[in-house]
Image (cartoon, rainbow, N blue to C red; front, side, top):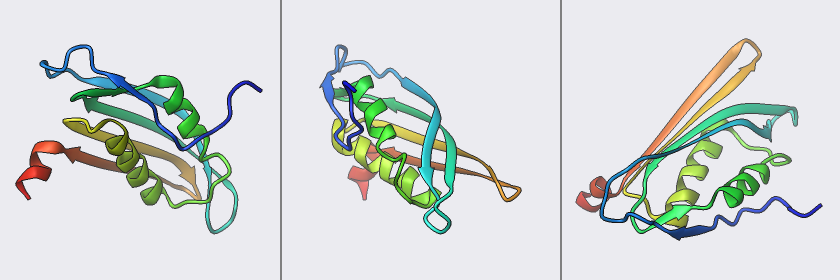
Length: 123
């Protein structure tokens, strides 16, 4: 197999760093494991960000998301960790990670995490 899952996110130089523009990734096939039962959990992630100096490289994002397939994690932790790792990889101006976790036991869960570089500096 030519590609393997990895937690390493690649980035590249933003071709228009002087302009605010939005990039959105639609990731409908996310899978991890329930940390309590070991059963698979499925989610549809939407990642939306305004890049600063760097942009996230798509293949590395695909391999990064794939790396969760055999990992047990709560929905809240996964969504927050994805946000944190994307911030580390490309330091965007703004970022929103929305995870729609599919129904298990009659309950669907939505977790939304946001990051704003301007707000962070004001703290």
